[in-house]
Length: 129
Ligand code: HEC
Image 1 (spheres, protein in one colour):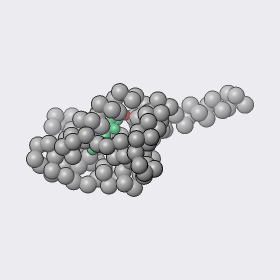
Image 2 (image 1 turned 60 degrees about the horizontal axis):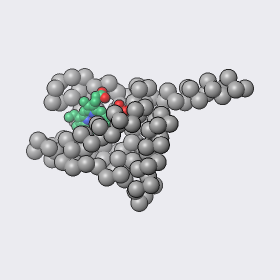
Image 3 (image 1 turned 135 degrees about the horizontal axis):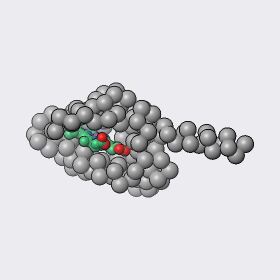
């Protein structure tokens, strides 16, 4: 029974945010006023804004609309592996990585850092896809 439980947990952890990233999302939730919402996260991820470079850009410009697909960094031309934790099990497993890229990528698209609410909404969206 224990082995089965372990196997199930290990399988689940391959497809979703790690316990470390889940804990980080709970910290963000404590600073936000609304429960995180994947629909709002989708809007944050897919809507276009005038970004850091003065051109229209969305998260999907680099990451593609289907999160299970690879994207392309429009600045460097490099391929970006899929953002979906189901398609790419290393996603949402490392808090440092998540924080660093959210800070940088919100600035690229929104010209400012994301609020705790926005970061949590968009992480919920990514985690569900
Ligand atoms: C200019 C291109 C670009 C844009 C626009 C962009 N990203 Fe990224 N993003 C990257 C790159 C490059 C990485 C790091 C390379 C990698 O992890 O494959 C990354 C990594 C991430 C990660 C790290 C995931 C992990 O666990 O490994 C998250 C989360 C993320 N981006 C979310 C976003 C969100 C949300 C937006 C919109 C606000 C966004 N990105 C817009 C290029 C971009």
